[in-house]
Amino acid sequence: MRARGIWLDEATSLWLTRHDVSFADSFFGRWATDVHPPLFSLYAWTLEPLLGGSVRSMRLVNLGGLLFAAITAIQAWRRGGDRDFLFLFAVMVAGSPFFVLYAAEFRSYFLQLVLSACLIVQLRLVHEGRAAWPMLALTALLLTNLHYMGSLIGLILIGAEAIHLFRTGRGRAAMALLLIAAGAALPLALALWLMLRAIDPVAVNDISALRSLMAIGAVSMSAVLPYVAALGFLPRISAPEEERRSFLCVLTRALAAIMLGYALLNLATHNLLPRHMIAAVPIGASILALLLEDLVKANRIAFALICANAVLLAGAGTAYGLTHKRWETNVPLIERTRAACLGTQLYALNPMSLLGRNDPLHGVPDIGQFFATTYRLIMPDAVILPDGRVILPQGRCPALLWIEHHYARTDLDDAELARIAGFGGAIRIVRLQRGDARALLAIYPAQ
Image (cartoon, rainbow, N blue to C red; front, side, top):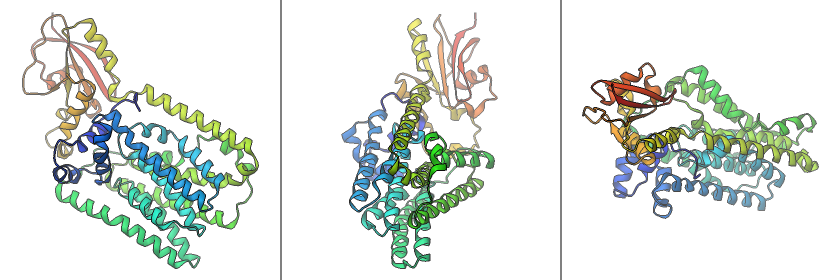
């Protein structure tokens, strides 16, 4: 959580939860115009005075999800829930790369993943006739109201179990589930109505149908395919008893419906990214855990191997998070260049200036401020460009031009990027780094 690189969405979360304006101004001026329900912002806003106003300290809000998961597990344990399943399910979810990477991020995605796992545990209790209705209602309410796209997963999971209960003659329990789903969906609908009154949502991505299908498959199988140890034991499993087999069918149908729903959603929005589906990760883990439940009861070596597999996965996810620094990727280059020549000026380009005036991204409220905030969180003295003036490099030290989200216009060469930023006169450009996502240019006066 301390070393993970910062990115744009975390700066957005920080801006949304600052106490620099009143609560009413935060709610109606910021949260109501955000393309996410206000629940996460309200939660983080409440904790901000305790945790402090930095991205890295605010990442601690994710500990609330772990506390909620612990309470859910203890409650399921006390109600007679299968302990071997709870252990195995927890290990498989925690070993997922999505769990490890998003735990170290100030955004709602980790909470979605954890609450989805909690909902699955609660639904299994319902399935077995051990329901904890108040806790289930709270879990559904929280999961459904963290993300507009993520809400689909919670509602489909509840709906799939309700259908099973109706079919097996448990109409009262099914109606209770549907009432819980309706109660969870009500604040979501109100938030959506408020948001649509304030802004016209813009698709900030352009995801093809093929790429969305690949993303859906990757997320759905991310808690299954990396568990080589668990998959290796599948040929040795015995047929589960009827109750567990029926819950497996519920989860499998729910996962199929979720995958279809997201594929159709992307056809309409072209805006589907893997993190939007993060709450689906525990479904695959729960299916595999249910299949292996009897095996791990009888074979502790199998469980130990699955745990070792999880440790390796968690280690790989941690290593990736520490080495892929996101917006902080260029920081070492910037620091070395400035140390070598103490007069070096640092300029950061708002990539919105690379887009045409009619590009729909300009309609995202405060997007320019989010870019400026992210740059300054990493390098507080960076000058944000363009600022309406012509910059004429002088002396022997370069002017550094730092650009994030450069992929917005990969067709522009280095000189064009410098001109858009405001550099004028005769200049010489040395490319220090340039990739699909970011660039760093050293600009000197021409000799």
